Image (tube, rainbow, N blue to C red; front, side, top):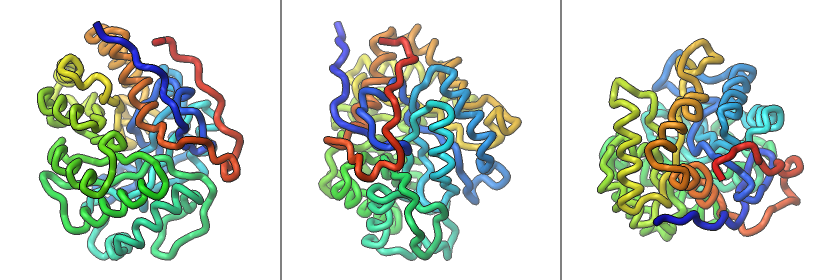
Amino acid sequence: MTTTRASARGFARTVLGEVAAASLGRVDYHEHLFQATPLLPGDELDDERRSADEAGSLRASGFDAMIDATPTALGRRPRALQRISRDTGLAVVATTGAHREEHYPPGHWIRSLSEEELAARFAADVLLGLPERDSAEPQPATGVRAGVVKAGLGYWRISSWERRVLAAVAATHHRTGVPIMVHLEAGSAALEVLEVLVADGVPSDAVALAHADRNPDPGLHAEIAAAGAYLGYDGFARTRERPDSDLLTCLVTAAQAGARDRILVGGDVARSSRYRAYGGMPGLAYLGERIVPRLEAAGGPELLHAVLRTNPQQFLARLPSPDLSQSPVPPHPAQTRSTDE
């Protein structure tokens, strides 16, 4: 018989300041409220009102918090994130770091930065705040600070630039304590990138491997969990690749094989043509309205509690105490709406 772990200890950094991680409630570990990348022309998320409406729909669907996983130079809008969080009651964790290199065309200024320069920028985003606009020349900090640092890989590839980013991400973790998210292209190179980060001194339980479910192999997922890393299941509503039922079956099977305490769930909808507020579908509410009930039916309430509450709270609970001296506004109130206790 499985048991529910104790609540997370430690604090998470949101755009409204530090909060006890255990107060975050249900967490969607991977979404984007703002994003603009040359890989998705015409699919920019750049309208604050519409993004706020999507955030409100996610909140109404039963989630209390989310990680906004947009890293440096891809359309981040920190003050808008702060306003949306305050207005909707949805706690938002902002992200620093850099994506896989295809998101930055040849000649882009971020690709010319050294490991040390990348690490300095990433750490400043965590310690001082994201700039209002990312540019080649460092900009004044907004005070809206990042709570996650991100890296990205290509398909079965860690390029020389991506290795530089990984080293900078590891250095940022060591300096600031914030957890790490890694984009895996099609779920590839999961154990390989974990080995790289561990060799750089990062504890495996500080790492979440996004898109692990794009390779729906529950045996591999159990191995990754046994190594200590978190697994990001965020491929729902992508029926051209596989039905949601495949991912739900994989998740439940992996949990039964020992991965229960390392699974995170998100939507990663990530483009305007899939946001209802921008005129598309299925929208951010799809995860709460369509997937969460099926997950509870397939895996039971304890698994649901683990993947929506305990696991993401533990992942984010990397700060031993709140840094109230630098919080831009008072800490976000504890979220209590969800009922999967």
